[in-house]
Image (cartoon, rainbow, N blue to C red; front, top):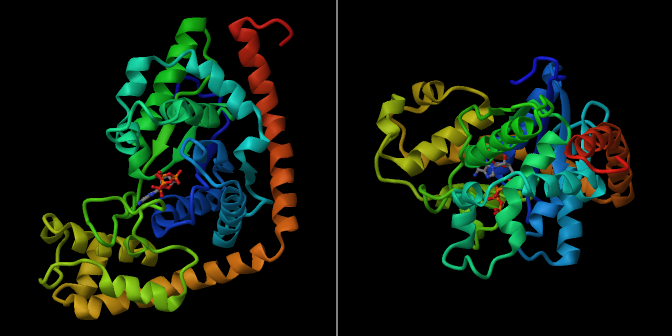
Amino acid sequence: MSDTSFTPRVFSGIQPSGGLTLGNYLGAIKRFVDMQNAGDFETVYCMVDLHAITVWQDPAALRHNTRELAAGFIASGISPDKSILINQSQVPEHAQLAWIFNCVARMGWMQRMTQFKDKAGKNTQNVSLGLFGYPALMAADILIYHATHVPVGDDQKQHLELTRDIAIKFNHDFGVDFFPVIEPVIEGAATRVMSLRDGSKKMSKSDPSDASRINMTDDADTIAKKIRKAKTDPDALPSEAKGLEERPEARNLVNIYAALADISVDQVLADHGGAQFGSFKPALAELAVDKLSPISKEMSRLMADQAEIDRILAQGAQQARALTAPILKKTYEIVGMVGA
Ligand code: AQP
C-alpha cells in the first residue's frame, strides 16, 4: 500500500456475459461472501456490463444475464444491506476514470496482457478496441472506489498487476499519493476451476461446450450427469496432494470438492484416497447438488421479481456514487481539468 490511510475496501466484479459458472462461484462469489461477512472491509460488488460488451452481446440477453447475475450474488449471500451491489453502467464514474487511465497506461503494457491474446486469438485486427482497453477499465473499476483489496480468480492476476502499475504511474506523473496500490487476494483451493472436458482449460461461461462447465442454474440431474461424464484418468485417487501433480482432471475434481466442502485438499485425500472415480464422482455430485441447489432455487425466486432486482441495483448505484463522484472530481482536479 502506498498510504496506510485508505479505508480497507474490497471491490470485485463479474461479467454478465453468460450464466454464472461454478468457476465464478468458487473463484469469486463464495469468497466475496466471506469477505463481506468477515466485517474487516467495506465491500463493493459489481456486474461489469461495460466489460461484457467488449465482445458482442445480444441486448435482451445482456439485460437478462445482468439481472440473473445480481440474483446469483444475492442468492449466494451478498446482502445489499452489508455490501454495495451495483451494475457498472449505472455508475458513470467507472467509464470516466477509465478514459483518464487510457491516457496513463502504455500500449506496451496492454500488448502484454495474456487474456487479450487468448480472447483475440489470431483475430487481433478485428476485435473491438474495448477488448484491448479492458484492463484500463478494470483498473478504473477498482480505483474509483480507492479499493485496497481485490478478490479474484488466478486468471485475473496479470490485470491486477496492471492496476498497480497504473496507480503507481498516475501517482508518480502527478506527484501525488492519491490512488492506492492494491493487494490482489487470490486464495483457496479453487482459484482456477478447470473445464470438466479438458483439465488444461479454465471453466468458462463462454465455452461453446455446455458439458465443460456447471452452471449455477443447472438442476440436480444435470449437475450429476456432467460430473459423471467429466474427463478423468483410470487411476484411483492418491492419498497425498503430490500424487495429483501430473493429473490435471483428477486435481480439478479434488479441488472442486475441497472448495465446496470448505476443507483442505489433504483432508479430501485423507477421506477419499484409494477411491476410484466410480465412487468419488457420485460423492462429489451429491456435495455439489447439496451446496448449489439452494442457491439456484433462490435465484429463480428472485428472478420472478425483476422490479425488486432493479430497485436494489438503483439503490446500490446511489450508494456507490457517493463514493465515486468525489474521487472522480479530485482526479479531474489533479489532472488539471477546469470546472472540476
Ligand atoms: N474457472 C474459474 N476458476 C476460478 N475463478 C474463475 N473466475 C472466472 N472463471 C473462473 C473468476 O470469476 C470472476 C469473474 O470473471 P469474469 O466473468 O469477469 O470473467 P472471466 O474470468 O473471463 O470469466 P469467464 O467465465 O471465463 O467469462 P467469459 O467466458 O465471458 O470470458 C473473476 O474473479 C475470475 O477470476
